[in-house]
Length: 435
Ligand SMILES: [Zn+2]
Image (tube, rainbow, N blue to C red):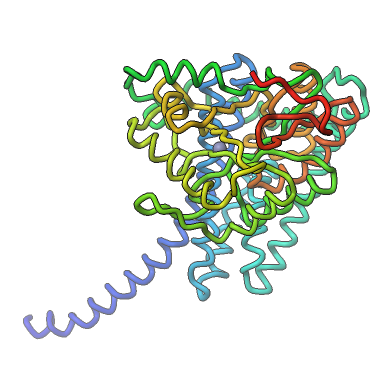
């Protein structure tokens, strides 16, 4: 008996090792599948929240949608990392992803959000898998054209009145998703992550009040004027693409950048990171930079101390990377637009000025560039003026941008820009009165 047990040890150990290896390999692959599932699930939730935001104009739904958008950026990066972290496992993990993506339960529309991860992957994959990724990207581009054609059709009508007929396929997709859950349910699930901590501004109400008065929200712009703003960058691929378009079109914009994309801050000392050349180019081409926090948290949830740190760390980087002059706006954009007296007081105490938006491109929800552009034009027509919110971290925004500029110009809109002191319009003439 004793001998038997001993004799079995090596077998048990081998089994244990093999099981551990299998678990390890399977674990990584199962993670790939889970990440894909979560990305699609989040995109569904974003679309449901967007519908709710439009129906009831609920700021919470909009904030929650943008919150999930930001999380999906992280998940997209995680997916690329999971697949490419081991050169040996790469083909198997890639197939694991495509296996889940090809599940007939998912539709082409569901797969549209995988454009950015597939683009990032295709640069790293071995030849066979790269060919597959390229084919998938082509199929997604074709679907995008079919879905977007209806919106392009809409642009030919001046002024825009009816919903373009081609939007039907996309609308059917969104309403299918809306049957599976409700905005209320999603908001409840996210409550603990989004709800503001009950901490009043206290003796800072003077600063908060001042920040409210000074806040830019688009209303201060002259009639038929828009300011283009791009959040969440700089991004090594998409920010330069946005800059190319702006240069070709002769339009200047403001970029609200996230500190962790700019560099590191340790004990108050800022060290610019690898995106410094993008920031330099942006300044040379006449654009300006604003502060969008360091880690993009829901600031209303943080303590005063942590809010101050989010603002100060990014400001230290901006001061290290952006020389005093035209490129510094002194603007701060709260992530998700989430601000209360406590947050506003901190913005004021850091001698910054809050800038929100009144025209949401909803590029955080909408994978169709033509639909994004269509929305910006409609909202601009409705408001007559405004600050446009976009994100320079996505292919769809890059593709929407030329249409946005073309269609706004066609309708007589002019573009505001930051001249180092204030927002001004296109040429030197027609300067805006500061509010
Ligand atoms: Zn943001």
